[in-house]
Amino acid sequence: MSSTLRVTVWNEGRHEKTHEEVRRVYPHGIHTVLAEAFRGAGFEARTATLDEPEHGLTEKVLAETDVLTWWGHMAHQDVSDEIVNRVAKRVLEGMGLIVLHSGHMSKPFLKLMGTTGALKWREAGEKERLWVVDPSHPIVAGLPEYFELPHEEMYGEFFDVPAPDQLVLVSWFQGGEVFRSGCCWNRGLGKIFYFRPGHETFPTYYQKEVQQVLINAVRWAAPGDLPKITFWHKPEPLEKLG
Ligand code: ZN
Image (tube, rainbow, N blue to C red; front, side):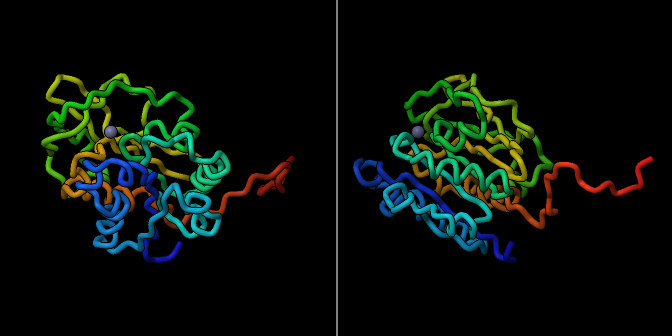
């Protein structure tokens, strides 16, 4: 791993091309806003989108990525299985993965979770209040005990994912539902963080608390200096046997 964290911000990028109300909020795409926030934190950030060759995720790009962030919604099925397998393999090798909002139904997330990723949802632009439920976790460093998004899509439980290894944030919505909004899992040598907010018609990714969570999550999910792990059949014993 190089000393500067290398983030690849992946975005489906279709809503921004086809929906005027999304283009108004993210004229250069969700990925551009996230990449700028990461650069502001001192990370090296590149972007990749669905309609690029190999969805912008070549072997070389992934080999040079410490943490991949994933936003997708309307075109999950257009992501090729070859690229999904490539992403999942890199996560098992230690690359961090941050899955955003409607990425709960993305192929890489479902492959790594093994469940349906289903949940309740409602688009009413209601208030969301996110509560920190693991105050000493590095992903919530520098945050208040709760913060609010004035207008968001609602996601409600039950969220069909494996019980998170660490649950960091829980959301309450104006309509009464609750949701596990910040979930951590380990898969192989890799770390995965799911972060709920980020509906494409709201300026969520410009909000400072949201950017702070994502910057913290990149630092948390980065692989660091991993020990070299080997899987051998019949390894030489370290001690004399018998
Ligand atoms: Zn949404």
